[in-house]
Image (tube, rainbow, N blue to C red):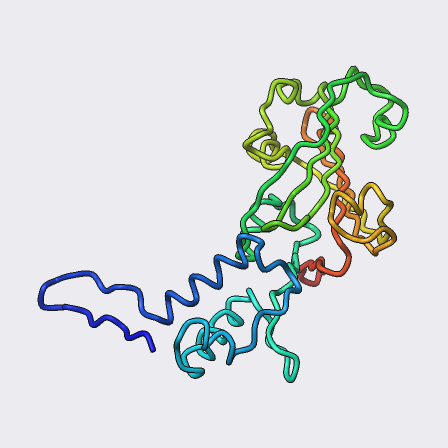
Length: 249
């Protein structure tokens, strides 16, 4: 059994992490690193107690704390499992995906899969809802929560409204965050639908082809005109969209 180190208050030394803190920190690290991915069944309480050479009571307290933070789910007679990310986004609010992921106590990362500065085609004009456009920036971004795919972002930016986007570096900042920081928007339109993942989308999100996905399409405007149209595709079994509103009149 590992003993906790006493705090030497008289000497003014800082308290060392307790056994409880050390165990919780190690389990959190396994989850956040992706070593224990969403849905993973973690070892039983008695096995974890043996691994960490502690009492079952101590291990039970650790698991209760992890469940309270939302990192794990404890199911009666089944054990404990790493929680699936459940995004709760306000439908009528534009949020940064990176912040949304971090609110789930998971690390965010993103990868730019496609970046093309090109002349607008008929499909682009329809997406932006404009009769003509000199050019668009087409960006496909994969967002990850931990090691798992969180969202696929297919975005068009109108270069007539946001010409500086052509020179932006999206390797460190996501396209959505870049726009929120630099372009005040005056109006937005959301369209929400359900779909099934085609093989290409499924491969990028790490789900099976034909799985249900939640699709959020958003178009935003500024005083200069249409700014961007984005299609956000989420694995359908991990996400919920929530809108908060008050009665009118």
